[in-house]
Image 1: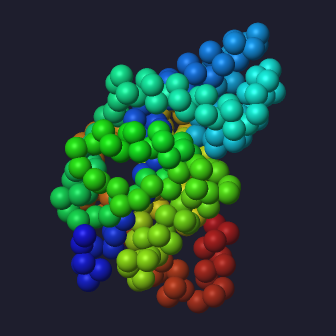
Image 2 (image 1 turned 90 degrees about the vertical axis):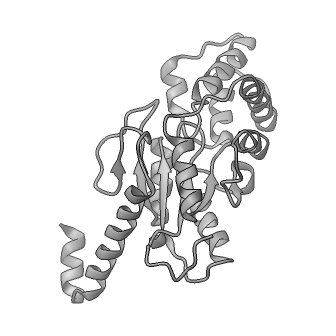
Length: 249
């Protein structure tokens, strides 16, 4: 672990999983199709896209509306088991994700997983990596409010602070691929990089957008943390009326 005395303002990277580290969204969509069809319903691509990045509880409710006559917990367990079966056959890594994880590990930058998938699937993915890159996992079954609520990201920051009390959201960068995930990270106050995958994301000044993680390095993430620190310093140094004016621009 990098010392808190390091001149780098980047102390931790918070990773989404599905669509960011692994391309599991097609597995989820196939499982949704099969489940809806088993109850005589139909499931369109457009409906599936609405669930990308959402909490599993939310998604299960939508599947109930589509005709699946199971309880929320049963739907979540059925979908998760099917995705795990597919992952056990092949882990569909996203370009650049493992390389960036390894780069961060070598640099001593802490990493945490923040996903709406539940523990069994997250642990399956993490166990497929060559090293223990993640200090801990914040999963959908460990929070009350799923993405787009910021609870999962705020929980991750608080867990990081247990070993580094000086750490704040300003020392972290989040990597996300979906609209609910990006919204959750932004709302938590963590500097956010969107890497759109299944669903395009409109431009938004509240986050950065990268086409891919391929070729990205620790230096790229450190530069984001540096800019965040400079912005915070400028805001702190401004008179109160100037800060209000800036916020309205």
